[in-house]
Length: 92
Image (cartoon, rainbow, N blue to C red):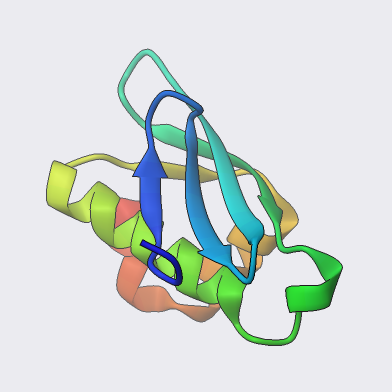
């Protein structure tokens, strides 16, 4: 559905479609099951709408539901976790 975040396991990314464009949060899964957030991207014409935060929050809530941990590698994910201490328990 447009405007709703989703997990695309096949492509190893979380996606947020909007206005025919796609915001992405890419990851790599480690052998221990933790997800390494490697890249966050929001198309330039969609920036300034908190889409990266919405997508990251969705991904972290998904990890929490699935009992997984996260390793923030991209600069956006690192800063997001520093500012949102309620996700500290998810750090691998």
